[in-house]
Length: 264
Image 1: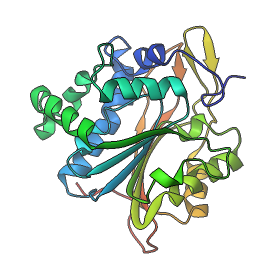
Image 2 (image 1 turned 90 degrees about the horizontal axis):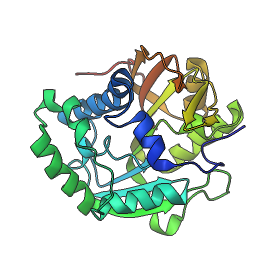
Image 3 (image 1 turned 135 degrees about the vertical axis):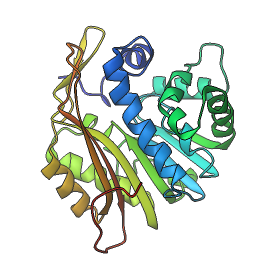
Image 4 (image 1 turned 45 degrees about the vertical axis):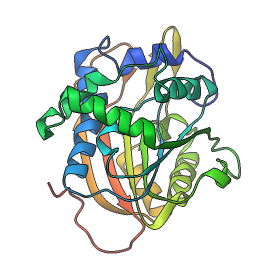
């Protein structure tokens, strides 16, 4: 059984299949549009800001960080594969074959972020990336702590259920995310409920089919309180990927009673 963090695959084909203009429009609307709109709105409302942001997301994706580039001064990016890190370095350095994420700007235009402004934000993000390094959740110390300070915000996009082989490993992964946060920091977590597979070329990968109850249990075990929660029922009908709903949760370490909704 192939797993995202254990088995090699073509990173460019992976991105082209699920996050580019060449993939199904409904799929791009969900996988790219859902997080881009949410993060853009969080930034516009002043809900997320600070000095340091840590990102642990699937593949060499950047589109979800561009709307938040002016809200933080230092970005630390963590990935599980050397090939993803090479793609990330190529984008940061404007390499000739670096992936173009400008198509994601369409989902932020409703907030006044047009394609020209998007390009400016890409350059701002590039200048603020302080470190791109490898992470391994199977290790006692998943990342190099000498270059990874505690963060005001941790973002994780579509990767936690892809690196978890059991409910317990999922719970531990969320606890690891929480360990990267400052006491008053926030976690922005995106994932898919009851995801059963995705295809990269001829290779079939199997994420952990997490449920809402599992997510709530994971957050509770990690000592996190939900500040905002949204879901999106999937309309995708594809032989390349399956999930029932996308979810977004914003959570913090502060223990106080809050309604689980978003104020925008």
